[in-house]
Image (cartoon, rainbow, N blue to C red; front, side, top):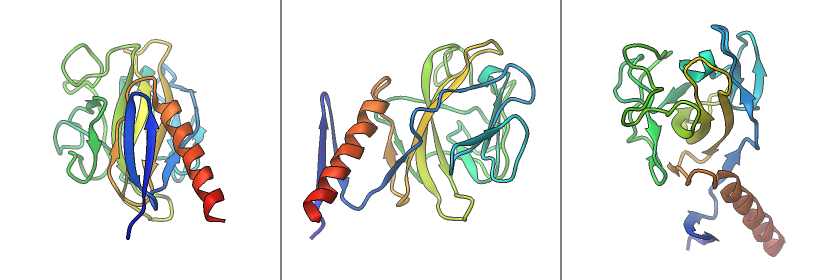
Amino acid sequence: MKRLLLIALSPLLFVLPAQSAIIYSGLQNIAIPTDFNGIYIDIDDASTSLSDFAGADINPFFGGSGLYNSASFQPVRSGTNFDDAIVRLDSGTLVSSSSVYSLGVGISGSPNNHVGLGANQFFPGMEGYMGFKFTTNGSAGPFYGWMRVVFTSNTAGGVIKDWAYDNTGAPIIVPEPGRAVLLLFGLAYASTVRRRRLT
């Protein structure tokens, strides 16, 4: 019989299979440059560089108003084309195989800009969530996750705050804004308590 792990974080309530493993990046606060080069990020180990490197998954630039993704990292988009708009996800959204992704490398920009004041756009300078699926450098996956970001319209203040994914391939729920760190600290604590009880 499958055990369920019940985690209550007021006012959130989550029920997760006990064997699920949420991988959390820790608070990163990676500044996004306002130049064309941007910053390259490897989701596997949170390594970054100002120049492209093997294993880099995502390259936000111009404060986050520009974004390049490798074939192994696919953000949730408005359509399946490689340049369709990247979508800002609301709290409670499930990121899964049913979400919309493109194939191969992807880009962003006009006329499908993901930063603006329209529906499903990232509001300039405000925190938002981007859903994604990705495959690790060791070809494991796909895994589904979310990334907490602040994108700007090519001004200072663009930041990749943190991200999380489920390494079992299970869907993941986008948390409420400002509660991501609280949620993941709760998951880590509950996992530690469970391990202690099993030993």
